[in-house]
Image (cartoon, rainbow, N blue to C red; front, side, top):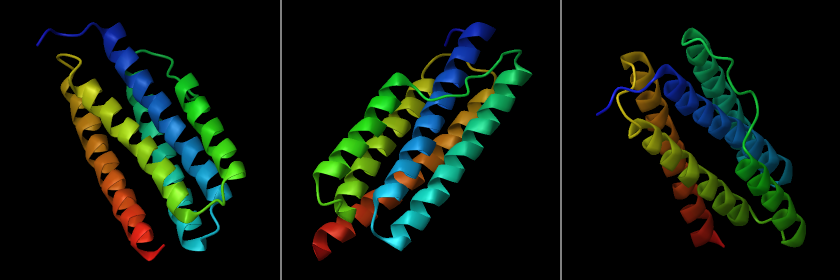
Length: 154
């Protein structure tokens, strides 16, 4: 793999920061729309986890000499908008909320995998991204399992 320039490393980190911020905003949006107190608690917890992951990435970007991203992406804003529109137009079922959440988690996992494929990242950055990818995959799997369990009870 080719060694990445520092600017490229920072771009990778900033992309993941946006992904985490998108997750934070999306989970909070879902928490605002679900009728289930169990899911509301889960979504708020996941939103905090995304905020913590973003802060960790921001610190790492700063250590590499960058001013890190602080907001989400345009695509994330569109997804959050879709969550709002869809929840206003549908019956706001928990299963629909979990389906939206799973789509967001699919995107996050793909973004982390793509980041690891970028090139020769510094060891500290590669380790951080790999660890956060494991967490994103666990979140995805839990959300998918919940979605499946809600589908069988509907």
